[in-house]
Image (cartoon, rainbow, N blue to C red; front, side, top):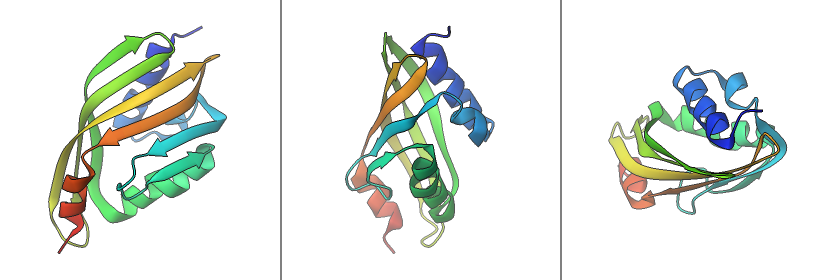
Length: 130
């Protein structure tokens, strides 16, 4: 069985390839996916379908070239932390955005059970303001 670290690393590799199916291959059907308050997709979304609809589709619609660039992955057993940067250009304002971000993953039984994002929402909001 793959370790939690490998599962999260595989998720990020799939994200780099824009392979949504592979990104969610190891995500539990009842995953709790939390985007930080103040972020465009803020809230806790339950299940892969809701995460795709309320997070990834929204980000794709509002931001051009949206991507997460992983700097390092920290292995904490069942808890894995991804640290890096978001990069994008807001479609309505044309303003670029680059912000530091931390993702905290909880993996149990070979499935991602929880995800929580921490980022500087003020910098994101500034890119969205005309």
